Length: 276
Image (cartoon, rainbow, N blue to C red; front, side, top):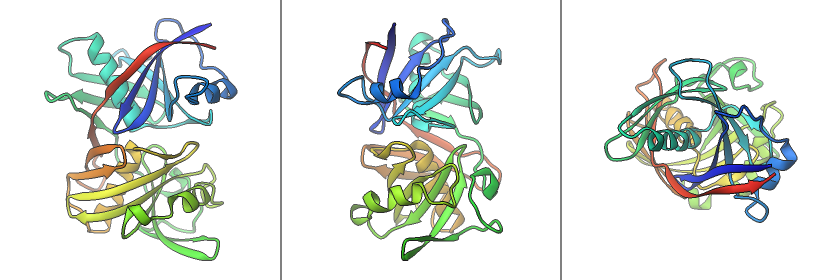
């Protein structure tokens, strides 16, 4: 069987979009997804977005998200923007799109400058929603990693996030701490781990170790989680530019139960077919 795909990038995050809206074909098993994720044996990706037809008549498509290790996860902000880019190419002149995702419906729009803005929904702080093992909800938690203890923010953007504040992302020990925190026993579903450094009240630097992938060039939900954590700490204004290794994203969150908005690019790298 041949599988058609689009390979795209959002702020450097490598995304493959597979459109099966008109076939109903189910995603391949994890071992095949892992082969496709490797640039040596497939198109290569951080996340794969698998599209099928939507149940909601107002939605253009339903999507599922798979990480490079073959595991299925709940959300991918950069992947959503890539789907919306594809839909906009199919529908010239249309700017507003709704999608069905594992974490619920998502509304997005293509701006006049070509960037895509996505309503990522409100952040969730209930530890059970992350999930995160703790006795009570708090704005910050102490997390023991080996012989070290870190002050962290924990929240869900439809998927689990742990955010650490660092002085400089260039010297942050992402390679060692990322995998340890991802699989920490207090995160039963594992976690995406963000390392954030403040520039000023409207700019941060960020590196993200993604669950099931490792460090990536960008993480859309990770950018949202970092800004939410900084806003709750009183360190950031509404409307923050997030500089990641692969590019820049803009995140806006008024606070409370309001939705987080994620804005950034979505660009086509290549399109083709691959044998399964």
